[in-house]
Image 1 (spheres, protein in one colour):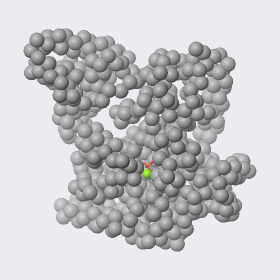
Image 2 (cartoon, protein in one colour):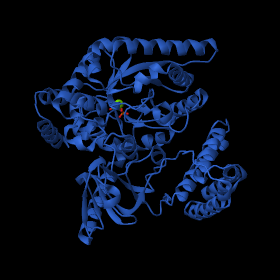
Image 3 (cartoon, rainbow, N blue to C red):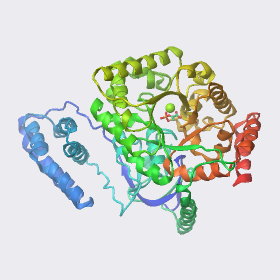
Image 4 (cartoon, protein in one colour):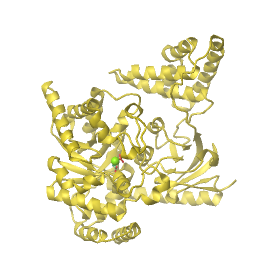
Length: 561
Ligand code: PEP
Ligand code: MG
């Protein structure tokens, strides 16, 4: 049927038109299934057929990439390993998973970066082969034919493979605006709609679609007028973006000349260049948990290499947030027992404090890199004073351990995130022993309003413009002002130009945004008079509903832009 409207929730802004690729997931794990001797030959034939199909599909990659993947697919370690395992009675699917995982560990541990990249090749062909054995196809991500990915839930592996030039849009059933995949989609500027019920039933494969997060919808098989309207909006957005491109080289100051640190959030080394190109001058939050994805934690040396590389290439400070896993960001090897209420459970700093070796390893990895740039270490999810004392103690311990080994150390700052209401309420006390703080509105909103940030059903209740959230932000800013310590914001609210006058009015000095939003936020900062913003913030704090706040912010922004 033409022009079918599917309702969803905007989780990453933008608009795109493209052909869908329906991505069904099968857990990439062994099941313990065995085969008997009589089934070995047919199993080997199935594997040969699946390998041939994967090899043919690799034709969609650039030549050099396809060659290196084929080399892995047909080589003795990968192919030979699978054949041997099937010969000894493992099911073809299990043999593929086991061989892939073994090779990822073997290659991943190599100090040689060329060998390490073979771990990624093994994972790529392993997962492709596994899906083929299950009768499922895998998209070839190519810039020539960008696709709109349609899936129930984006897996961590799929998230790591996202590329803005190859993925025109994402439509999912699960995952809210600040879920893991949405964070990456926003960072890359990929439009995404989530909360689509029965996504596999309502959106077919290879269908023309408009992915329209702005209106919270997806249009399947749009008619001509819908396509024309979308094309018009896409052209307008492109023009607006290029009209802001000249701002990249401009210093970020308010209209009356007050400097503001406009930094960006990153998930890994690949995000550094885009933030520089966009005109940000530092990293306001490196979500380090992204480098812990996979089957095991990266070694201390590997971590320090990654941290050092980021510090070296960033023109200003880099705020590295210690792992915030658990809750809505599951890293299987770090996950504890299933919990009734994971968002209120064993996650973030809580988990790190219970896994002291892992935590110390990360702290040492960061400190080892401290000579490479301006390092600021930040602890997420703090909710009680004893945790902060423990964090300080562990930083000192990591420092002394490295000193005892004669490792050269640079200067660094240590700060906290305010993302649990207790931290906002106690900010005066909590800041005493720390150098800076940064507000995480994604979590602060969910905990203040008791609305799960991942659950599209309660999206209506989840809004950082709720007056209660504004008041907690104001309390934190006032406490930082009294302590004379810098305060920033790394939550999504900082990427919304509507919030900027208010945040500047409260005295926030660091705004850490997603790279695609740097230009629009900078444009707003350049137009704000800091004295006007102070008054505006005072008035905003008197409002009592989310709707009134939004209207007020909108009107104020229109006044100055
Ligand atoms: C936040 O909670 O606002 C934040 C910045 O952290 P994350 O989104 O990674 O939880
Ligand atoms: Mg958070």
